[in-house]
Length: 341
Image 1 (tube, rainbow, N blue to C red):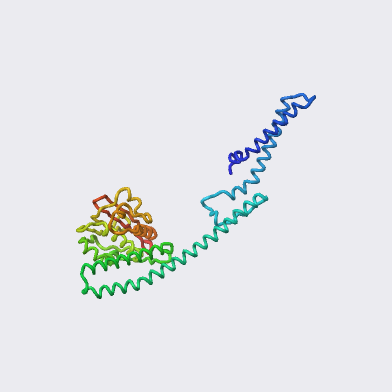
Image 2 (spheres, rainbow, N blue to C red):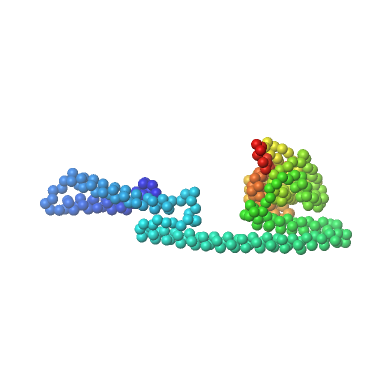
């Protein structure tokens, strides 16, 4: 609370003081036998004005400590700390009201956190349970590979692959908040991470006759292989989805500055300029996602970006409509030991 704001809030007191001074002058003027002297009126106004200033100053000083406690700052969490230090009945009333709001907020938040944790536990359990019948279904499909039409077999494999990918998305989405308890940082070869992902998408490459190549020498990066594998799968899945038949996907591994770049370039339809800045937003499908025959959840790139940031990896995009899209993962150079040791 500043002095200016305090004076503005106490306008009624100042108006009352002016009214009191005016009434005093009026009474003196109407009193019989009393000679009206303007110097006396002026002296009276000065004395009463000084008393008003003294009163307002004392009131401001006494209240300032209380107002400072009610002032919101970025450093303090208002809904985590109870209010203390009330000196009057009015302050006590405000303090009790605010503390009751804080208590209710904490109870609601605790209940929400508990429910959220229960939901996450259920999702994790469901994902692991669903993987068993999913794996069994894949084995059954492979057992009847020669009993059904090749085209139908491919379609079955594709749909099972999509189910598996969506299940993985659910699992990784549920683990976003608990990331710090579910990662292992060590040295990985980039090719050992991306090659299994490429093989998992083999059916799509064959069906759409998409060529791919990996350019550059293998590089070692310090990261979590499981999470990077998931990130790369989301990027590759999008590249395949939006690349037309007979297209090409080029994966490049190269050193750049103080790190390593893993880039994935396709010859797809590209991303409209108005959508580029929003493609990493949760649930955003964009113009391509709405017009594509493939269903888009809007979670793949959001998860990729979120997990990349948690791993300290920079994910960026370069795209032009009808010319293709390039996704880049930049791994900063990190080591277990300092260079001085």
